Image 1 (cartoon, one colour):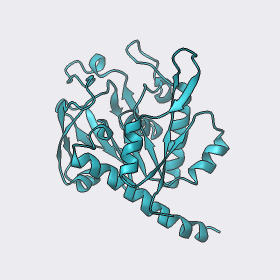
Image 2: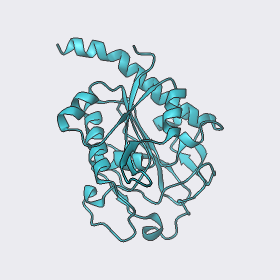
Image 3: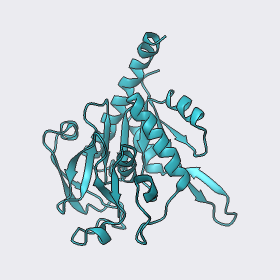
Length: 252
């Protein structure tokens, strides 16, 4: 059935208060935004074998890379600085493996906040471990209010993101302390904060590989452009699902 594409969301892990037992999950806002766009979210836990991930990726119609903890700088060839935040090694392993599989299969990918950073690292790029420490004249990007519209983002007019949104000036929330420093192979930065920090990127020539540094899942109730972004991603996944039987037949 192609009406409700299946979109994988790699899980984060948290310790349950009291018992300390580990829970795997994802924030409700991502899941609700995908459901509202007509998709079926599928949470993917860490710890799966390479073979299991490859088989699972073959059943997905898209991959959403959500926000969360910092990526271990060793993943992009740097030592961990004191201003780098909390990392989740299991999640790094899961997300980078899934992202590279998705890129190999040209599976639609939508990255949000950490997800933009993950997609960039998977493509061979690097990050600022802390914007405030490494770009001291930057805006205060790490806000505490999730729905606060903290600054504008200018979108490149010839970008796919601009074509999807129908706008080149966005007002966005801002909840991050890291950002892309060096784009990976095939990555094009297409959105900028007023201070020059990268806020959106895409991989041209792919079915759908777009990422934003802000959190549209927190704004879908009030912001039409955020809804449009999720709708475009879901549609790309829906089209990919429709193509899948034909592709499998042609490779038989």
